[in-house]
Structures are given as structure tokens and as C-alpha cells.
Image (cartoon, rainbow, N blue to C red):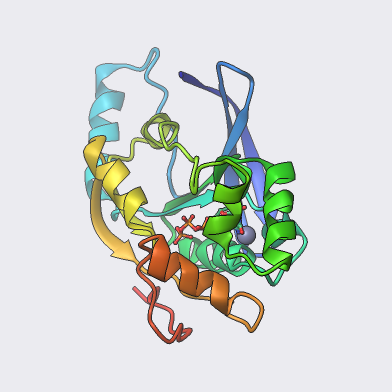
Length: 224
Ligand SMILES: Nc1nc2c(ncn2[C@@H]2O[C@H](COP(=O)(O)OP(=O)(O)OP(=O)(O)O)[C@@H](O)[C@H]2O)c(=O)[nH]1
Ligand SMILES: [Zn+2]
């Protein structure tokens, strides 16, 4: 699959101002990147002196703080208490604004890649007592169907090849590392824990390999 940059604009938010960049894959699926302090260098017809300026700018800037966030309509837009996605997105946006250099890669792979309808089918099974992993499997679907091959082209667009990655999911770290992006630091993010999602988080920790504090304390590790 290949990915093309389509367009960008300023996006003022409650968390501060971002640049929003839209990318599209061969099938017309859109992915979104919000950036702060990551200018786009136009490679097409700039003089050599500009290229030197670009190298200088890249060598001086801090390692960007990056969040790869998979779409969760129910959590991100509707404030669902069944997961931690909304608080994770909001906290990551604040943290990136605070550091002044970073990006949210908002990937349109709802429901860990099975889509919204299937996620709600899985929720119906969860209403009957099944956990988040078994619910996917009972539907004949993978536990996690996500891909991350859009991340390389999206990060390359803003000249990023080394990151501080906000995640508890070791497979994201492994994917980037295996594809030539240095993960200088993994920044844990445990926020939005409540009575309705504690079991969901425990399943991610115990059955899906997520690196979560056993007691889900809400200490932020984002003060750098
Ligand atoms: N199939 C399914 N998807 C879910 C469920 N709850 C949340 N999701 C989706 O899971 C994705 C978020 O993945 P998570 O496993 O919460 O976290 P992660 O992105 O792997 O890891 P972090 O970087 O630590 O947040 C989003 O696409 C959500 O829509 C669920 O019960 N079933
Ligand atoms: Zn969610």
C-alpha cells in the first residue's frame, strides 16, 4: 500500500494550535497527522543552501514526542467509559503542546482494525460477559488487525526518523524499530482508568502484552 500527502492547514484546538495534515492510501482511506514544531521542508525545488538550512534545523530540534493513536469513535468523540482512548488522546495532545515538538498520528483503524460495526458487535458480546479479546475471536476476527505501514511515510513528511513514543503497547515500538525509526524512549501513558474499563485494561495487560502498571495508578510519565 502506498500513501500520499494530500493537504494541510492550521487547526486551533482546546489543547493549542496544531498543523493538521491529511494522507490518503491507494483505496482513498484517510489518515491524519497533527503536528507542533515540525515544519515541512519542500524537497522539490529548493536550492542547496536551503538543504543545508534544513539539516541545521533537524540537528538542532529535540527528539519529537509522538503518539500513534488508533481511531476510537466511541472513546474519542463520545467519551465512552469502556476504554481509555479519549483521555489518552487528550493527554497526548497536551503533552505534545507542552514539549513544543511532536505529532499525533491518528490512524483510521477503528476497533483495532475490525471497523466500527464489528467493534459494536464485540461490545454486545462483552455485555454478555466476554472479555475484549475473546469477543473479537468469537466473531471470527483477529485480536488485533491493525497495520502501521502508514507511519513511516507520515513521519518522513516532517523529517522524523527518531521518536519518543507515547504508548503502553510494545508492538508499536517493535514495528517502528523494525522499519528504521529509532524509538529513543517509550513514554508510558496510563490515564482515564475507571470502574467500567479496569477489566478491559487488565485484559490488555494480561492477555495482549500491554505494559501497564498492575494497579493502574494514574501517574503520568509525561513531565519531560
Ligand atoms: N475490537 C475492539 N476494539 C477496541 C475495544 N476497545 C477499544 N478498541 C479499539 O482499540 C484501539 C485502541 O487500542 P488499544 O488496545 O486501546 O491501545 P493501543 O493503541 O494498542 O496501545 P496504546 O498505545 O498503549 O494506547 C482503538 O482502535 C479502539 O477503537 C474493544 O473492546 N474491542
Ligand atoms: Zn477506545
